[in-house]
Length: 352
Ligand SMILES: Cc1ncc(COP(=O)(O)O)c(C=O)c1O
Image (cartoon, rainbow, N blue to C red; front, side):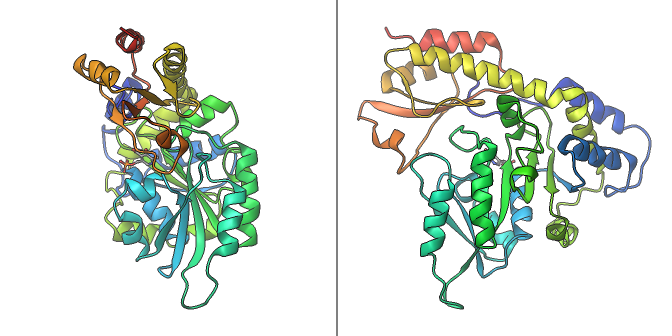
C-alpha cells in the first residue's frame, strides 16, 4: 500500500519502451536531434501555442531555473506558505536566482488568491533600494494541499500581478492530474489564464525523469539555455528525455495515467469520508488526500504496511483543529496505484 508519493512508483511501460527505442543508433547530442524537435512540437500542439521548451531531469531544477529567469537577486518570489519551492527545495531557488528572496503568503483558504496577493502587495515595502522588490508569483498546479487552481483563480491572480509587474510561474509537477481532473485544456489552464512559464512535470505521472520548462512568453526565456548549461542541467543524451515526453503525450497517454491516479484517489477519499473516525482536511480534487485520523488508526495502517506521511499544515485550519489524539496525513495515488491497495487501506482504516 504505497500512498507516500506519486514518486514511489516507476515509469509506465510505454515510456520505458520509447526510451529503449531512442536508445538505438546515433544522434547529435545536447538536444540537437529529431527526438527533441518532435517532443517540442508535441508540447506546442498540446498547449496550442508556440512556446519555448527546455528539458531538465528534476522538478527542483525546472522550478529554480524557471524562476531564475523571472527575478533578479534583489527581487522576491511570492508563493503560498506550503509551497514546494519554499519548503521542499532547500535553497535551490535562492541558489539559482543568485539570492532572490522567497516570501510566503499565508492563506488559510489553501490557495493563494488575488485578494491575498493584492493585500500583500499593497503592504509590501516600496522603499527603494532598501526593500526587496516583488517580481514573481509561483503556484503549484495541483497545489501542495491537493487543490486545483481554476482558470478564474488564475486570471484574477494575473490581473493583480500585471498591476504590479509580476510574472507568474506555475509548478506543474502534477499538471497532468489537474488537466484530467478539470477536463479543461492545457492552454486554458496556463497561458490563456495568464501563466508566463510552466514547469511541466512528467516524472510523477509516468516518466522516469523528465520535466519541461515551457515559456509562453519568449522574452523571459532569453537566458535560459545559458543558465541550464551553467548549472549542469543540459543533458548530453537529450533524446532520452525527449523520448519520454513523446510517449507520454502521444495518444493522451499522460491523461490516461493521470485519470487512473485521480480515480483511485476519488474512490479512497469517498470511502474515508464515510469512515466516522476520519475527516478530510481539504476536498480531494485530484490525486492527493489530506485526512485527519486517530493516531491509533494511523498506527494500525502503518503496521499493515501502508506507506504515507504525516503532514504539517501550519497555520491552516486543518492543522489547528487537530486534537491530541489525531494526526493529519497525506495520501497520494499514482498511475500505478492498484485497486486492491485502495481496498486494503479502506478496510484497515475501518473503525474497530
Ligand atoms: C509540488 C511539487 N513540485 C515539484 C516537485 C518536484 O521535485 P523534485 O525535485 O523532487 O523532482 C514535487 C515533488 O515532490 C512536488 O510535489
